[in-house]
Image (tube, rainbow, N blue to C red; front, side, top):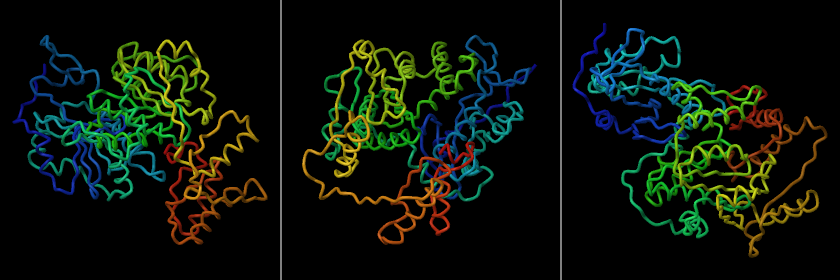
Length: 501
């Protein structure tokens, strides 16, 4: 036999958090990548606390004889819950640390500066802890559990946990930059006067096409247009999924969506931004944690297997649905990925927007975009953006000349409509190295010489790109020996967390 624990007077967690010292920033139901906790408390000295609130009550929650957590159902029968809430709480701690807090040089596991806590307002802390079975999983053991008495007595102690070393300022700044918070007030207003009309036209979708594709070269404004459309749909209360193939692009989309949402008073938390395989991984993880049995083709690479499993999860009714799906850098996607999103993730009658740059088809995946059976069946409207605002004008001419003389010349970047080269010129230098192994060293020396020769330059004004990690490691070493810090992703170890970031 078992009996439920005694109840206490329920406290309002949100009200308690509002009494924290003003040096804390508390976000309510923020969107952080694929995670959306109830609260996020951030402090420059005490780090980050991810807060999940459980509305369980002692008379409907207990520990079953087999040790599992039980809830009382509408049929007045006790049944085990499908998922221990410590699991998503621990996962949000890891994913937020890895994607939105850790710098490239940090280790692979969350530090004490990132904490996750479950709050059960209707329980005492002692009783709340007794509801959860003992776990040998270190990740679950690190999830804090508090009751309403702890919240009422000292909410500051709850969010500070056992304390931590002062977090790096760049990490806190990085996290704040990627938190999409619910605005104090949601109002529909107009676009900023500086927003280009081409972006506004795509965002407003005056033709009300259900499926559209944006074609344009690098810097044409495709990502901005996609983010603006996502913001407009969010202002109408729509749930939007914005995806890219590259994780860095997903973070960039998040920033642009937030900016456009501020312009028109939309709720940015309605827009989920992620890279495609992270989204599939979350879908599969959630499905398997709640009892789904998923199998991929034997021997299939992970990038294929995770998509197959995600599709099965949706067939079993175990995946989240969205009113609109937006895809940035669509030339990096495959037809199988599109089919998953269109056939399973999108609600019936939902909207899609696909941004494509054929000049950057580095994986050779665009053939499916030209299939008329697919585009005609969906009634896809193609929108072309014929300018580029990213490259200096003289580099446009040089790039097109190279494509004509060295490549097949069929893909050309758009040239400016007027002569603005006097205002948008570039300075180019060519350098030769005696041996291939000297490339990284030469790049590092060039960066050091640039900073030494121009006092107006700062280290963050310079970026360098290498074909191979070993070249990047050598370049970074040269720069660091000169006393200049380098923020980079290079490592000779393929399992180094730095490479993921």
